[in-house]
Image 1 (tube, rainbow, N blue to C red):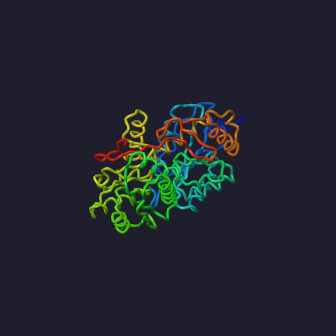
Image 2 (cartoon, rainbow, N blue to C red):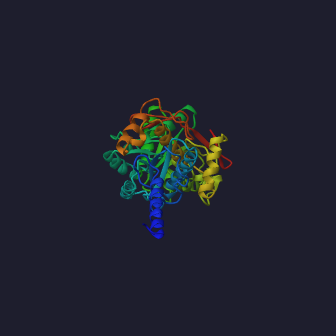
Image 3 (cartoon, rainbow, N blue to C red):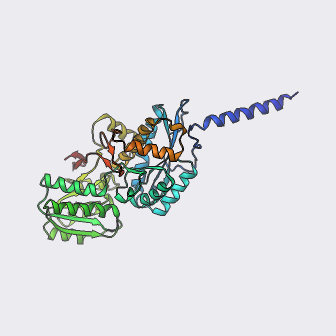
Length: 408
C-alpha cells in the first residue's frame, strides 16, 4: 500500500500537470508568452480566458530604442490599449501580445521576427518604420504569416506580397492627397518643398506630391532636400524657399526635423504656411517644444486626440495611464486600430482554432480582401483593404490653433 507521503507527492504532481495544461490557453497549439519577449507594456494576458476561447498570439515589431523610439513606443502602447480592451470583452478570440525592439534597422527587425517565431507567433503586427518592414515582410511572405503594419507606408512594404497589409496611408497617396487639398483650398500661390532624400517615407511622399502638383498646375518654386533626420541646420533650405517667394512650404518629414525648421524659420522672420504629413503628428508633445512655433501649421493625419467622441476620449485616457501621461498620436491610433482589425477578422473565421499560422494567414488574406470586411476605428470609419494591401479611408487635415489640433 502506498504510504501517506508518497500519496501526497503523487497528488501534487497530478495537480501541477493539470494546472500547466489549463494555462496553455491556446486552441491553435501556440505556447505561452515568454517573459523575455515583451518590452514595456504588459501582454494583456493576466486574466484567464473563458472555456472555448481561441488565443491568437500577435507579435509586434518596432523601435523602442534609438532615434525612432518615439514612434515604436507609440505603436506598442496603442496596440496594448486595444489588446486590454479586447481581452476584457471575453469574446470568442483572445489576443496574446509581445512586442520586440528593432531599433529602426532592417537587420534588427529580422532578428526580432525570428524571436517571435520562436515564441510560436500567429500574426505579425508591424513593423513601425519602412526599412525594417520591407525586410520583415519578405520573411513573412516566405514563411506565410499574416502581417499588418500600423505605419510603414512605402508601397515597397506590400509590393509582390499578398500577406502584408497597411493601416496607414501609402506615401504616394499622401503626396497626391496633399496636392489635391492645396489646390481645392487655394492654400498657396507659390509652393516650396523640403524633404529628407535619405528616407523612403519622406522621399516617397515628396515625389508623389511634386508629380501631382505639376498635374494640377500648382507652382512649385523650390525643391530642397537634406540627407538625414539628424540634420540640425536648415537655413539653406529655408532661404531657398524664401528667396523663391514660397508662401506655402510642404514638409513631408518627421516631427523632429520639422520642429527645428519651424524654429529656424522664425529666427529668420520667414512665416509661410507650413503643411506636413502624418509623420509630423506628435510634435506638439515633444519635451521642451515651444508650441507657439507650430501656430497655423497644417498637417494630414487620420487621428485627432482632441476629438470629443467617446471612443477617442476613452482611448486617450487609457493611453495616458499606460504611457505615463503621454498624449497619443496617429501612430498610436493606427496601432490600436490594427489590433481591432485582427480581432474582428479572426472572430469571423470559422474553424480558426484548428488552423496553423499558414492557414490563418490565408484565411485573414481572404477576409481582408473580401470587400465586405469593414472596420470602424479611431482613424477611419468603414475602412476596407485592396488586394494590394493598401487601406481605403478618408484623410483628415488638421490645423494647430492655440497649441492644439482643430479640424481645418
